Image 1 (cartoon, rainbow, N blue to C red):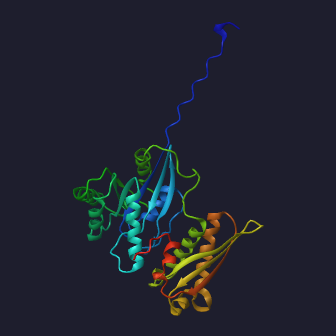
Image 2 (image 1 turned 60 degrees about the vertical axis):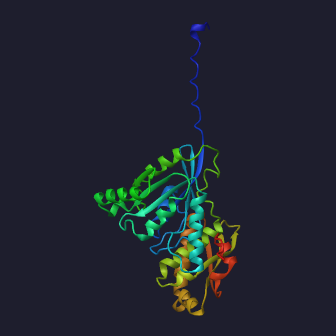
Image 3 (image 1 turned 45 degrees about the vertical axis):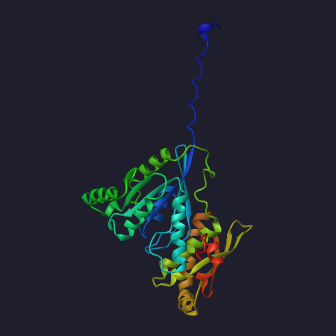
Length: 313
């Protein structure tokens, strides 16, 4: 074979993109939609979502892969005026998450607009380092002219790097957020395995799932003064998982509410939680729930450590 007959050289492989990784704090008032948005960004459920405010207690990190970037979204408890020790711990945790992040996103419920609660948050945000972006949520139920006025008002109070308008419920606009942060986070190696959607241990996620079902089932004040702990997690030889959890309340009267007449309430909570956990672990789940009275648990430092919260002195 002469030189003219040689096969053409194989094209050079493209240079791999430099990897990026960074933390993005999701900040906002209670019920702004942070947990719903986090689940959309990650593409799976990593944070509990209910119609009640202040359901997120500890910091939940959801991990999204987008192009060559790993985005660690930090879902913080809603920021509000604290009344109890647990409230103070939740608010302190939220601001700690924002201070430690590379970037901060303020999520506003577009239907409610900028009230005193949101103004207070924006005032404190101005002292934080790093770029901030504005996310207006619930655009599916808000008029466009109202959205534009809200965006203008927000920028008059605090300069934002970018503004996004989304519906966390149906996912509209979420891709644009991922595109922006994929370019904005620092260059560097990924911090978690690329198939890991959250840094939340399964035992804690399981407890959060059951706590979500408590919120959904019981509409009184009870869920705010209850907590769930996973006491045992056992992978069985037949591939199923046995989970034992304890729901702690502060008084006997609350225990009766959780159990319900002839145990019907706790049975419904258990069934709902078991079905969702089976979907998550992709295996049959045997869930056993117990209800115990632990007086004044909301003032016990050990319980705060279990939830990943600092105990406020």
